[in-house]
Image (cartoon, each protein chain N blue to C red):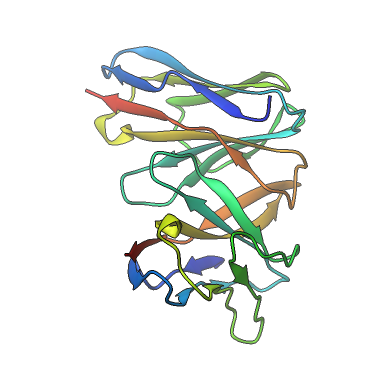
Length: 113
Length: 111
C-alpha cells in the first residue's frame, strides 16, 4: 500500500457538532502532517507528528485537536468550528522526519454551516 | 522571515514551447527546496527536489543561491503538463519538517 488515505471525502457539520477526520498510511512513514487549504490558496501547515509525538502546532485554535494513536493513523478532532474553517484538509506523511518528500492524501472537503 | 514567492499566478504557453515557472525564496540558511504539482482531480505530489538534481517528466530546476531562486524549466511543453505547480521551502523546527509553499502557478498548455 503506497498511498495516504483520508476519510471521509466530504463532511458537512454544524457549528455545535463534533466530528473527526481520519488519515492512514501503511508505508512505515515516521512523520505525519495536517494541512488546511482554502480555495485558490496553497496548503498551510497545521500540525506535525514525528514518531507519534506532536512536534509542531502552528498556533492552531483548540477547536482542532490532533491525535496520533499509532504510527499509521492520524486523526483530527473537530469541535465548535466556525464557517471560516470550511476548507480542504490534507493529510501527508514522510519516511523521515526531516528533509524528505511528503506524500499527500486526497483531502477531506469540510463545510461548516 | 522565511518566504517563497511565485510571481505568476497564471502562465499559458503553447505546446512545444519552453516553459519557465519562477520561484524565489527568502531564507538565511542553506535552503532545501521542492516543486510539487497537482494535476486535475489528482492529489498533490512531488515533482522534484533540488538535492536530487534529477529531471522528472522533462522538468529541471536549478538552485541559484546568489539570486535566491529555484525556477522550474522544461524545454518543450506538453499538454499533460497543464497543472498547478507549487514551490516549497523546507524548514526544520523542533526536529520536524515544515513546508512553506508559494502561492502556486497554474500552468496551461495550449494545443
